[in-house]
Amino acid sequence: MDNFPGLSLSLSLSLSLSAFRHFIFGFLGVLRQLNLAPANASTSSLTARATRVGEMLVRPPGLVIILKWSKSCQRGEEGSTVPLPKIPAHPLCPLQAYREMLAVSPTHHPNQPLLMITGARTHRPSLTTGQLTRTLQDLMTTLAYSASQYSLHSLRAGGATTAYHAGVDPVQIKRHGTWSSECLWRYVAAEPANRSQVAAKLAIACQKH
Image 1 (spheres, rainbow, N blue to C red):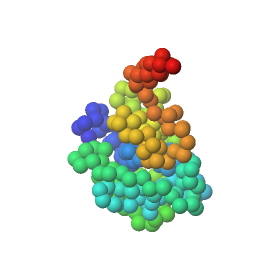
Image 2 (image 1 turned 30 degrees about the vertical axis):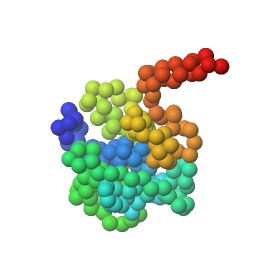
Image 3 (image 1 turned 90 degrees about the horizontal axis):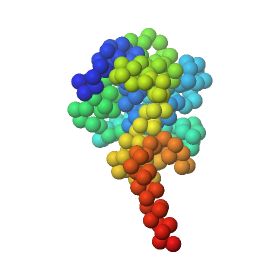
């Protein structure tokens, strides 16, 4: 974690270690917060939307998450697949995060919540969305950012924005993030320069007519 100044303090707790793995999957998978963890620890919440052990598979060159629920796909219908390629020798490698997760909290039942708190003695979910949000905000405070500006939606927005500025076709980003509408643009933060270019091109187009 040398690439992330101050991160070792936050990751010293088992809760933060489990949360950080959620953050990796959420960012690279452009996942909704309820795909990461249930809203609460109730049984009904567990079976509704959060990703389960049997829905994350090791498939070269990395991982595949089978989303059984999204806004465009309700649980019980055929799910969407979200690939997470490995990032060799990088702290954000999802495959390494998954292997570390299994090493510290081995689980085999396919219906069990995906991630458990290290050392947990029960089969209750390791984290709820509220716990994840608080841990993310604590991390951002450690890194000298304003915690109030960040939530689990930041992982989805950040993943989509990073892909967009890396030149990924918005159609592919929509597919990866399981958007069935144009809501993608509520998440993608376009740089002012890009917006200026759009405005300039619109002005030129108007002058031609």
